Amino acid sequence: MSKNKLISVIVSCYNEEESLPKFYTEINKVAEKMDYLDFEFIFVDDGSKDNTLKIIKKLRTDDKRVKFVSFSRNFGKEAAMLAGLEHSKGDYITLMDADLQDPPSLLPEMYHIIVHEEYDIVATRRVTRKGEPIIRSFFARMFYKIINKMSKVEMVDGARDYRLMTRQVVDSILTLKEYNRYSKGLFSFVGFNTKWLEYENIERVAGETKWSFYKLFKYAIEGIVAFTTAPLSIAAFLGLIMCLIAFISIIVIIIKTIAFGDPVGGWPSTVCIVLFVGGIELFCMGIIGQYLAKTYLETKKRPIYIVKEREED
Image (cartoon, rainbow, N blue to C red; front, side):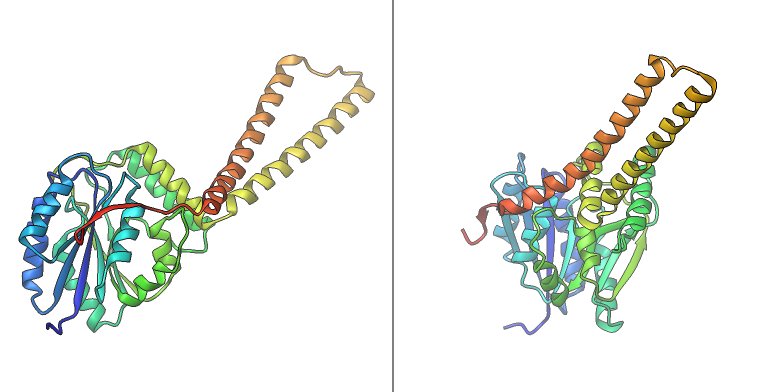
């Protein structure tokens, strides 16, 4: 029996039939170079509607290192990554995307750093956003600036989910059982010594991105709500400011009426004030509603994902 250390390569897949063969070719080249280690490839099919699962099964037939977990429906990338981590057995674990935006060629360097430089995590971050829409890049940078001012957990701009971790790190992450998951924050939350590798953005090898602007916006809200309560303080602060403005306005109106006999202004100004205050109230209620919604989902205790099929089946 082999005494080599084992690396688990976790690949989240959603409609990746075009990318999978190319990804497997590249990761297999890396595995051949790192022949001093054993590999297992865990493909998590996140309810794909194309031939993704069939391709994975074909890979499994030809290579017994290939394992898979197939969901009963699409549960999202966060659920897919969690499933991969829970099914991994490696001494070292890495997360990758099937579209080759996470270059497998970095894996030998990442392993060398963990073994010889005594790091627990080697993570990757993009230093450029080449090929990404300008508006999306702008909002992404703004998100990291905002959340780092609000949260005690550091979020690294351009951070990818692609990272190599020790078994101890993964076991620590798996103790975090929250339903609303934001993995970039969870990786930072557990701590451990982390080294960042920087590389320029790589465009997808095939297929189209599954992340629309709306989905990214929702994901950003997920991260803010999961790792800071600062928005609740902002809502309270806005309420206090509005009360002060209203109180000062009342004093001014009383003084003007008594001293100068100046009548109160007409209805247009009143309507504007009512709409403005109403907007502030709805905004604050929306913030509170986000936290209540997340609490509601947590209390249901529903499973984060449901497995339909695995290679053992």
